Structures are given as structure tokens and as C-alpha cells.
Image (cartoon, rainbow, N blue to C red):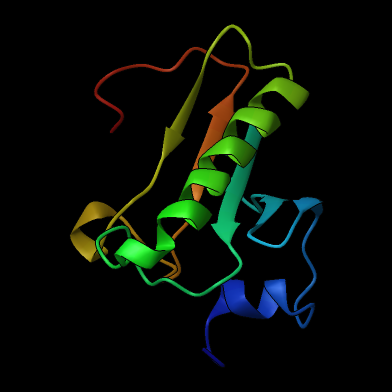
Amino acid sequence: MEQCLFCRIVAGEIPAEIVYRDANAVVFKDINPQAPVHLLVIPVRHIARLTDPEAADGKMLSQVFTVIQKMAAEHGLEEGFRAVANCGENGGQTVHHLHFHILGRRCMSWPPG
């Protein structure tokens, strides 16, 4: 995915404030934070949207969820946080590489907007 912004971040072609990296996931700070803590958790392998993973991706996605837990703990979000994945243009997805927003350290309201 040569043109994918997040694939280029994973490859080190575009700078990002990376706070965590392993074989399955990369976590970096959002450049336009919507909360005091706003991280993006992305799988290393390009998956365009939440509806696209295959059965073989199950273990990798499980590890991505473990990274979300780890990042919440490391960033002091034990009082609560929001983890969200936008899916498709009508769902608000602007970068077509599966990613999860971790938002915390402020009270989240419902509906989200």
C-alpha cells in the first residue's frame, strides 16, 4: 500500500511520535488530538477497514487489542477511556488503514458527535 499514510508511518517514511511498536502493531500520538491522551493503534499489516480482516487475522487482531489495554494502562487511563474505530467514509474513517483511537483523560459524553 504505497499511498497509505499509515503504511508509510510504519515503514518510517513519514515521521510520527511513535510510543510503541511490536511485530503486529504501531502506536503513535494523533497529530490533531481530541483529548489530553489521543493515540492511534494500527496493525502493521495493511487492512483497510474494520470489515476487512480475514479469519487468519484473528490472532494478530487479538494482539492489537492487548496493545490497546497496555497503552491505556501506561497512559494512566484506569478511570476510563474511549477506544473507537471508524469504518468507511460514512463512519468517519479518513485514513483507509484500520486504526483504533484511544482517547482519555477527559470525560467522554454520549452521543459522541
